[in-house]
Length: 61
Image (cartoon, rainbow, N blue to C red):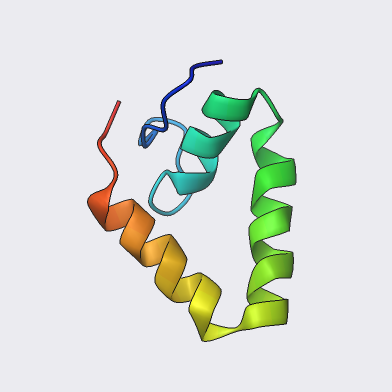
């Protein structure tokens, strides 16, 4: 668990955002991914845009 968000491309399924969030929080990556899916179903394109921006702008581990 770290205090800084970094993309985790080694454990990534798509861009490494969920794996990076899991490393930062200490929560299982599957739970983070399910949360992303739920947020996408609720907000639609806003969450997809957020995910892509984080994947593009965040530093890599």
